[in-house]
Length: 62
Image: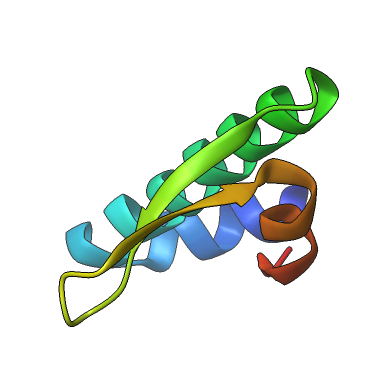
């Protein structure tokens, strides 16, 4: 965890926000996956679809 803390200290505000967003999305997907739920996701073209959280979790970077 020290490495992540070091990165956060040296990061810009935007980078810090993106790190927090990634952590929040992972937690959301993990919680939904544990309940066997799906999440609604959108693409850059504005199309939306329901995706099982377990599938989405496989695609999220750690």
